[in-house]
Image (tube, rainbow, N blue to C red):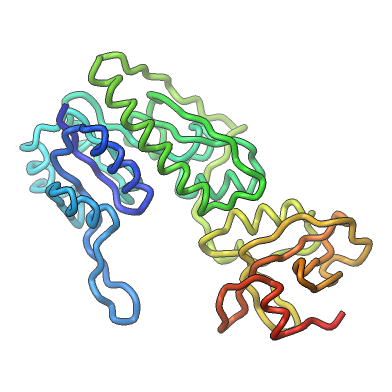
Amino acid sequence: MRVVFMGAPAFAVSVLRRLVEDHWEVAAVYTQPDKPKNRGMKLTPTPVKEYAVTQDIPVYQPASCRDEAVLEELRTMEPDVIVVAAYGKLLPQALLDIPRTAIINVHSSLLPQYRGAAPINWAILNGDEETGVTIQYMAAELDAGDILLAKKTTIDPQEDAGQLYDRLAELGGEAASEALTLLERGEAPRTPQVYGPQYQYAAMLSREMSPLDWEKPARVLANQVRGLIPWPCAVTDVAGVRWKVFRAHVGESAGKAPGTILSADKDGIAVACGDGRALVITELQADGGRRMAAADYLRGRPIRL
């Protein structure tokens, strides 16, 4: 079965790698154009392009998939299936109609929960204990296509969004390969999504979500820290210094006003929260500094209680 793959970031690399390792015929890869990066503004390829080049897979980088020349080029490839994973562009109906069998998308949630841009982060922000990946038939409406299959996984209470991202990328590759097998055999199911008020849309993240509000419960703040990794990161101001908080956990009962620093030692920096518990910060980065364990930070900048 002839496959065209569309994707860009590291998540998509894991999916593409699994298809290659499972010996699917990946005829071409579509990804984002190279973009200027860092201070030198050097043009940098996407992770998907970097991997595809190592596998001698032809790479295409159109600025738009609505261009008729791009669509015609794709038609000449005569793909049986197009697999999409974090491509980063809305695809027109004319493109959805090209493959002989199906165009499928790898989405990092259990649809219909968390349609949208940041499903991994929102699962952790909301304190979910389970998530997964869904293979869906693509439709014109974002993340609204029929479900082909889904794979579940538990979320570890200390797992952050970056770690879960890596695990779901691997699970997504497994699911995509399984979906291709079902499509090839003519056994792929279609389950319509029913999106109701009990489901949440996974909106894009923003820096406005970063500040820690110590009036909130410690568990909510711990989930905020985990869910905003690697960007935009939870932040707080202590003694005139702003910290990014990378690692924290719920501590013991506090008995102090929210925001009060209870202790600052080798075990971390414990801060009282609105529910009477403490949030213990164990890894941070001060403005202008580097990311480090809280205990190491305190050696250079001890906090007087």
